[in-house]
Image 1 (tube, each protein chain N blue to C red):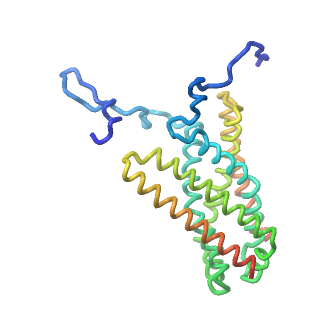
Image 2 (cartoon, helix red, strand yellow):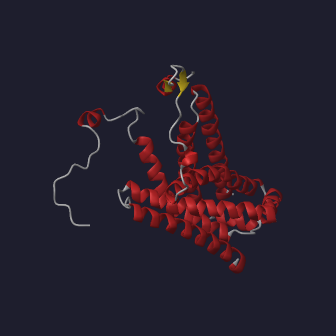
Image 3 (cartoon, each protein chain N blue to C red):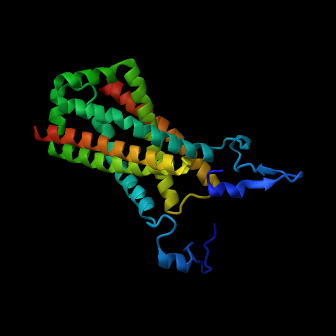
Length: 134
Length: 143
């Protein structure tokens, strides 16, 4: 491709849209941006998780407790749990909003899923903390 | 009609009768393409991985509960059905991981040319399979 030297506008939004800033969602690009930020954080964290799973394959309780008793492992697991479940929460929200049309059903499903994700995230985090401090 | 948006999809046929106009796109008339397939699989694996975190939580909660609970969970994961589910989990994870990088490069404005997009799609599928095979090779041969 030849180098384009003509002047061009890279911004796809109208000046008024940019000034008002928030769009139809009333929260601007915050949700979209947070989804990308967590996804970037999850690249190294999920590789760490995969390696941890290989190390802990077939481990007995003592080995598992010793692994999560190491502060760095506990910290990385907590980071993984935090970023992973917020990424999941945002991702599932988008999927539900795309496919569930009816307002009441959509709201109910969003509440159930968000609540479930918080429950799982806390269960995982408390378990890691318990092993980290025992 | 329950939703005001449906009003936009009502028309009249040649006899003047009110009809519900068809919704576009008609998924069934499209030939499956690597672009649409990788896209929908990103969603499917995302939802599957979300459900799969229940396994991770069960693993951690069992470890925090004690020796007996943890042995039970480890035995379930080591059984053939457990290994099959975990195999599916790793394949979904590596696919979502690789295709996620592809999406991030699109977000940065790169790789939109059709040949590039088809090439990166094939690359993602290949890399996901390769990483899954490598993971299980390490798990069974080295571990």
